Amino acid sequence: MTVKKRFLRVTNLLFLILIAVQFLPNQISDDPQTSYVLWFAAGAELLVILVSSFVKKEQGLNLFLDIFAFIYGLLILWTLATAKFNLLQEALFPPPGCVFQQFTEDIDKILVNIQSSLGIILQGYLLATVIAIPLGLFLGWSVRLGNAATYISKFLGSIPPIVYIPYGIALLPTFRSVSVFVIFLATFWPVLASTMSGVLNVEQKVIDSAKVLNVGKITMLFSVILPASLPQIFIGCNQGLSVSFILLTSAEMIGARDGLGYYVKQYSDFGDYTRTIVGLLVIGIVVIVISFLFNKLQRSLLRWKR
Image 1 (cartoon, rainbow, N blue to C red):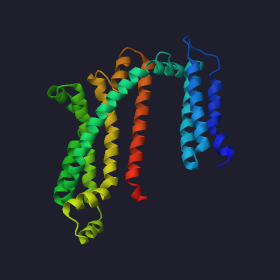
Image 2 (cartoon, rainbow, N blue to C red):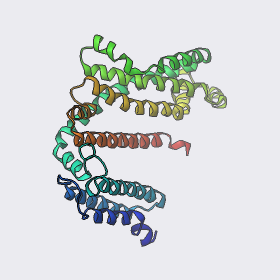
Image 3 (cartoon, rainbow, N blue to C red):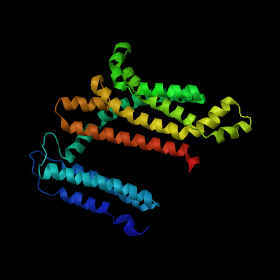
Image 4 (cartoon, rainbow, N blue to C red):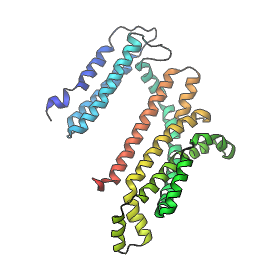
């Protein structure tokens, strides 16, 4: 790629505009903490330059630069609408510099809440997949049983897991175990349904080829049926992961004493919208990172399909 394609892009122009916007006169009474935006923009642009220098695939570089262009554009509009023109209510929509400052001050507390939320997600999600995938394989192995179980899983999976929270609070010892139970239900039914669907839709010629080689039932199930069903299974796993984060933050906002949902709910109740926005941004970043890592795992396990 040429120097122009690497370093003279819309993303770099938006960075310069973002820097210039910070030096416009402020229209709000409080300090907008402009220096925090400048430090963030400088760090982000340094990362952009480093990636632009070493990435060889143009498609990957375009995606990376487009993401940072969107971030720069959002920060420009956010700064103009708050600190520079005061178009939004100051108490509800603090300038980005104030949000960045609050993030740096609360970083220890945020990391503890992230650890708590991810621990709950990991426990409930892994428990659900470890049970749902083998069960879906065995149920889907029988066409008659699999078809019946598919309708049952659709019925039970259509019930929002969050409605079980009152029963969980009454039956389980801690709210953390209730949260794990909610994540388990959110993951179990879509993974079970997708696993059974994957098994039921495996091409018959794949099974016939394995039978010609006198493959045993257990080997057939885990060495032939399971790999062939993986694309469909990952659809359910992705769905369960997305719903799990939504339900986790909702559950934490109801009765938890830690976690990202609790962080947002606690400070929104006291009208601290700077910390509320910090919590919302952190939740979004955590979900994006987890989804990215999960997609990398999926592409690795399904590389044989390329």
